[in-house]
Picture 1 (cartoon, rainbow, N blue to C red):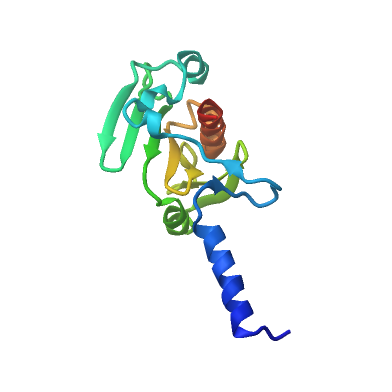
Picture 2 (picture 1 turned 90 degrees about the vertical axis):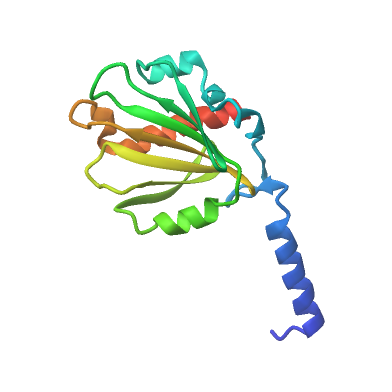
Length: 177
């Protein structure tokens, strides 16, 4: 089928407009685009991404420590006991989700997934377990990231650390809705 230049231009323009509109997060397999998650209210208080009761279900942690880096707000969850897993929760106010996904595809552990219906990917620089990060696209200009570091010998749930970060990321996404 040969399309006239005018029809091709119209199709390309419509496709580009859809891709760059940024008003919602489209997910394959969903008839209706998902609404963007508003992470802006957490940039000054990233430790509020998870409630105290949810934190208690995750483990026994010292007082959460907020940190700020350029373009990123982070909450460090350090375990009270040595060798128990520690987490970090991050909010990014940039559009690095796609480039981050491309840059981690070669990691020893990498998988694309969905977290609470939103596009996500999980990766680890090690295939021995105990370390993983899950990044969830919350909008065209922001994402959240959950990272865990621990010893799988002491915390058997970290043998598949990416499952642990995906589960925690789902809690965070639910809190953002």
